[in-house]
Structures are given as C-alpha cells and as structure tokens.
Length: 342
Image 1 (cartoon, rainbow, N blue to C red):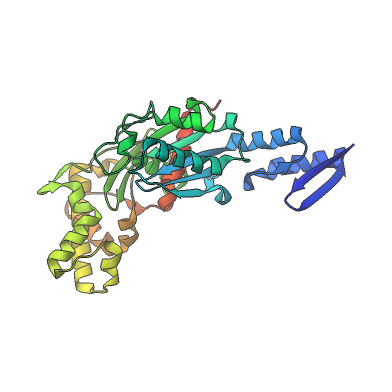
Image 2 (cartoon, one colour):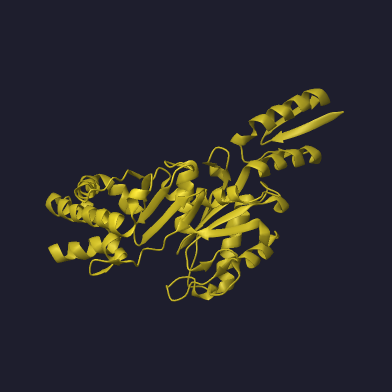
C-alpha cells in the first residue's frame, strides 16, 4: 500500500512502515510549524489534533485594528505565518465591525485548526462585560454601534464555533498576563503593569490572574492620573515651553532639543514615581512592568523616576516590557491557562 504526503512542492512516497516513522517524527517536531497538508485524511486528523492541543488563537482589539495570531502556549511563540492585522472602522455599523473581526479570525485559523477544536482569547478595551462577551463601550468615539451587542454569540455564529470556545478579558489585564506567562515577569510573582501611551493603563497579576485596576482616572495632582502620565501631557507641556504644537513623544525627541527633552522627561519621571507610590502602592509588588510607546523612551526618565522613588523611601523594582505590542496577544491566548480545555 502506498501513501502520499504533500509538503508544499515535495511529494514523498514510501511504504507504510517508513511513512509511519515519518509521521511520528513530524508529530514530535510539529511545534515549529503551523500546519501540514496530508492527502490521507486519517493522518490529517492526527496532525491537526496535535496543533489544537498546544496552539490557541490570541486576539488583540484596539480602537482602529484587530490583530490575530496562533500562539504556541508551550513556548509562548507566535506562529508568524498565521498573524493577521486588519484595519477596523470603529465608527461603522455593528454588522460591519463584527464582519471585520470574523474575517480576520478566519484568515488566521482556516486550514490550520478545525472549527470544533478552536480556542480563542480576545483582549478587548472596556467597559465590557467580559464574562458574557457584551460590549458596554459608549461615548468614546469607537465601537458605539456595538453597545450591548453580545460579541461572544455574534462571533461564534459567524465563525461556526460554540460561544464557549471564545473568552474575553480587558486589554490591560492581557498585557500583564502576557508578560507574566511569556515575558519579563513570572507567574509565581505579584506583578504591577502600566501601559503608557495615548492613554494610561493600570493592571496587576496576582494569584495567576491578570486584572484591570482602572486607575487611569484616579485623582492626581490638580486633575486625574492620565492627564499627567499619557502622551497628551508631553504635547501640552511642550506647547507651553515652545508655543509649538506637536503630535507625540517621538516628535519631541526628534527635535534634539536636549534642554527641553531633559526637562520634560525628568518631570514625567517624578510624576510617575508619585503615582506608583501614592496611588498604586507599588512597593507591595515584586516587579513593576512598563509598556506602551512612552516606555520605549524609558532611558530618558529612568534616572529621575528611581531618584524620586528613593527620595520617597520607596523600594520598587521596575523593568520595561520585553513582548511589547505582542504582550496583549500572548496574554489573551494565556487566558486559557485558567480554563478547562475541552
């Protein structure tokens, strides 16, 4: 009896015994590949099952995009050939938005994982009913049409899967989960995470679970924390000093005005230290992890931050994210660590 394995353009024909040896080798080696196409159906099922046991689809939904990818949860790696990033018009109708979401997901798993075996973890901004999968976003200039839409049921129907195969969590919580499981953190430690960018995200990871602390609007100085720790603080302060409008931190650095850059980042570091100690009680955590675009300039405010912490008698270990924009994607897949895989 002759069997045929189709690996791209390579056709291998061997007798049954040699084929079985090849099959066993591929199963052992399979973690490095997204999928194989086997012309013999029974062996196709075996290999696909191997993929499903160790790979989960991680999804990161932002205000203008959706990113999906198959995650090898044993190694914490993303199968690059499965990654799909799609622009989304967050002001479109509910049907259009959910169609965009489902199309991206289908592009990720089609021909790679059987529908009945799919496990999907989605990092989603709030407010959101994460248990039931219902959007509560309203008045934020994004996803208004999804208000009170059951995304879990809607996506399940479009993807031809069960609602139980989809789970949601806050995007900030997914960030810290991704770093705890696959990044610079550790699942055995208590972690505090901050995402510093156009907004302020606060989250922690305690007892093997990430959660959103929702401290972006905590009272701070003369306003709220986000007004002092997000991009708009930099652009506002830069305009006060120079009478020039600028779009973000990267543009400020590009001016190469060392005096202004030093002044802004020094004050920012002091503000962040005050927030960490007074509002978040950061000293109770084993490690603080900084993410977001502003954290990419950590070297510019690291000294001021640590000096201010020391001045306030704080003892806080701070590191920057190693997974960057992929942290939420990995954390979303990692949500299934606390679920019973069926």
